[in-house]
Length: 168
Image (tube, rainbow, N blue to C red; front, side):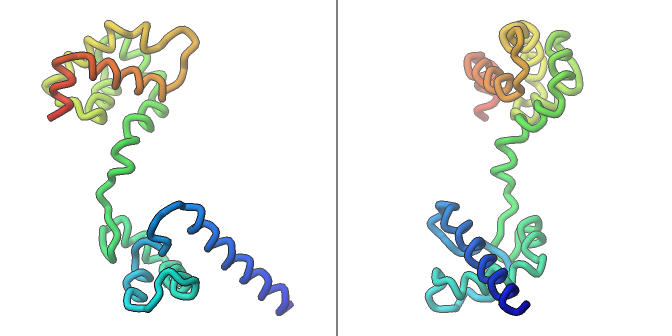
């Protein structure tokens, strides 16, 4: 029983460290949180022992709070999420967006415009663009929300009014 427990703990330690190596992050530590702060003064932080202590301390559950609140050396700037909001929204609302693009108006289309950083004053131009190019955005058989958002971004970049509004 004890031997099985030791093997299981050893395996978990190796697997947790392998994840850090595979992340290709130049800072091979646990990132942020209470563990990072508590062991910050420990010499040779990139050695296994201090990293295990940091991760173990972070496993108390406080790391999720630190990330969401922006404390303990973590950030909550949302930059990763911000770049994906339009894609996630398009996946969830693809059918509604398809209908509203054909109509050139709608609350889902307005929400997508906002997520794509189009100012409310330019929503009318965005709606007109989506209605005008509806058939090219949603080519026959194409049901990919990723392709839709990509095509919309390209069309916005080509449209002088919308491109200027998004660039601000």
